[in-house]
Image (cartoon, rainbow, N blue to C red; front, side):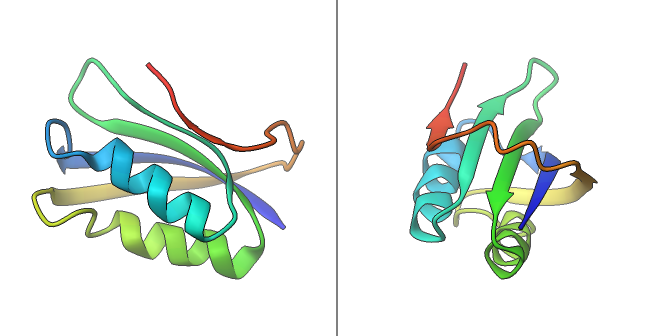
Length: 90
């Protein structure tokens, strides 16, 4: 199990990135959240089985079809298991 805190840069707002991220995270049985930032990036936290988190990070490098990801900054954090589901936050 691991937890990753992720910042995604590029054309990632206004392209349903959060919606698709939540859908993918739920399909991988991940917990956490995703939100837009005022600076145009998307921020997310993913908690779950190592392989599922790795698959989510791979997906974040492309995102949905309308997105244009230019950079993904991912940092592993201690796993406190704070989340019981995956949510889109504001």
